Each structure stands twice: as C-alpha cells, then as structure tokens.
Image 1 (cartoon, rainbow, N blue to C red):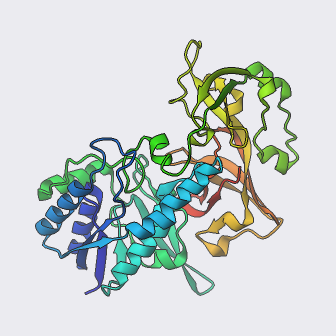
Image 2 (cartoon, rainbow, N blue to C red):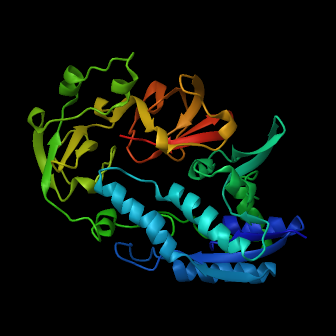
Amino acid sequence: MERVVVGLSGGVDSSVAAYLLKQQGYEVIGMFMKNWHDTTGVLKGDCPFDDDKNFAEMVARKLKIPFEFVDLSDEYRKRVVDYMFDEYSKGRTPNPDVLCNREIKFDAFMNAALKLDAKYVATGHYCRKGEINVDGHTYYQLLAGLDGNKDQSYFLCQLNQKQLAKALFPIGHLQKPEVRRIAAELGLATAERKDSQGICFVGKVDLPVFLQQKLKSQQGSIVEITAEYYNSIKNSDESDLDSLSKPFVYNKSIGKKVGEHQGAQFYTIGQRKGLNVGGKAEPLFVISTDIQENIVYVGMGQNHPGLFRKALFINSNEVHWVRPDLKLSIGQHIELMVRIRYRQPLQKATLYSKDEGIYIVFNEPQRGITAGQFASWYDGEELIGSGVIAE
C-alpha cells in the first residue's frame, strides 16, 4: 500500500482530498503545517491558526487517519515573507501564494512528508496531473482543474518535474459544490467552512501595516495624469518588442498633485482602495509608482489608458518551464494562451524567445500588468511555463 501525506489545512478541499485518497486504497497520513506566528497587521479574527489546526485534527479523527504537525515558520519567513518585503521595497508586487507552493508546500513540506516514507504528497488544489511520454521520457503535466471557477493551476505555475512527480491532486476533476456535498455526506466538520483568503498562511492583512514591519512609511505625492494627456504623450512602436513591453515612465511635472500617501511601495498597479482622494467624477486608480521619488501616479476611471499595456517582458533567469521539453529556443515564437493573475480569463498572446528573455505580446491590451507578478502560459488545458513580470 502506497503512503500519501495530505496537507490538511483545516479547509474542506484538503479534507475531501484525504477521503478520496483513502477510498482509492492509499495509506493516508494527514499533516498540518504551521507557517506563521506573527499577528502584526493581521485583521482581527483573520488569524485562524488555532481554528485551522482544530478542524484538521477533527477531520483526521473522522477519517481515522494519523495526524502529524510540522512547524515550517522559519522556512516560510525566509523564503516567502522576506522575499515579499524585498519585492515591495523595490516597487514590485509579489505573489506569495505562488511562492508558498514552490518553496513551502512542494519543497519544505514535501521534504517533511518524505521523511515519513511517503511516496506522494497531496493537496486540495483544483488542478490535475497528467503524464506524457516524449521520445521515451516521461514528463508530468500540470493541467487546469475542471471547475473553471476554481482552477488553481496558476498558483502552481512554478512547480518543476521533480515536484510534480511526487504530487497528487485528488479533487482536480471535481466541481466545488460536489466537494462540499461529499464533505457534508461524510459529516466532516469542514463541510461548511468558508475558503481562506488573504496571504497564504498569514490571512487577511492590512498590507501597509504588515509591510511597515520592515518598510518605513514616508509621505509623498499622489499625482493625477489625465487620459487626454496620456494619449498625447504615449507612443509605442509595435514593431519594437522592448519599447512595447516597458511601462510608461511618468514625470510629476506632467500631472497635477491631488493628494498625499505614506509610501509608494505600499501601492500596486490598478489599486483603487487606500488613495483617500475624493471629489472626482470617477474613482482614481494607481497607474504607476515611482519608488525613487516616492510618487504614486493615478488616473481617473477603470478604463484609463494608463492601466493598459500590450506586452510584457520576463528576464531569462526568471523564465520557468514546467515542461522543459517544450522550452522555446532563442529566436522562436509561439502563439499560446496566457494569464497574468489568478482567475483572469486566458488571453491570446504570442511568446517571443530572445537572448535576454521572453517577450509576451497580447492580441488585446491587458489591464494592470504588474512587475513582480507571475505570467503563466498554457497550451490548451496544460500550463507549460511561467515567469516573473520584470517591470
């Protein structure tokens, strides 16, 4: 009987994953991981560690499987939270959930599971795993979950072949309502629990308060750029990939100061909340931040042209191929489907492989392309690669 360690989170998805594996004849061990102790900036009532652990234990008892506990908080701070602080200090917006899967769930946690002589590690992610044989070599595929509303393949876009070889995703073929139905029929305590939100393992946070643990607040100007002025100065040469993929660099002299903020590093492209500037016909949105000058540039209306860009660039050292056999050679290009954030509908785009990295040119301009976030690309339902947006 093959042994599987399931990452029991205290939620319904991992609970049903454990049940399904047991039904399939695996020897199942439930393991709960603690990754965060600090409550600085965590919104009251949204630091559910004790509740999560209690629910995970209740599920293990109900399913009659062993329950293990592992504290990975040191690894989490070093490999996820410190990276977050560093990225925000540079004016970039990281995705801690993608990092958490690459660095913690399928690395530090997987190593802890393998010490228990487990053959596989399973999670409650809504995605699927496939296998394909290419020239006598087996490659593992990362496939989208069948529930289009819950597909979480994007969050796993940085996994490699070694990690996928040991991974199982038991609920990837199910719809969310079906998962809740199974949990309810089994009488699992997690059947009606709400899905977790916020930063992976930290919970919902007041981001500026959370970041001020290491990043100092500093008063600066909020400068508005009108759509008319933006259109008069923006001129992209669509034949030049480099200029097409770069964000426009603003100068405070071309706009009007409309308010003040406490640190440009606390804002991200497309952000609406937290600007505290009133008296406008439409809401203001962040269209750019200047960390050096500590300026936040904003535009009025959710369709302000400064929010949109036709292309992005990923440095060569930040390009990751989940399927290394499909890696583009220098000079090659290919049409694929791309997303730049979780739950964004897939977008048609062309990838161009150059010495310096990969340029992604979309058929339609994309709203809120943000440095530090991950772009992932799909061939049909298979996620085959990803990378960090450079700027």
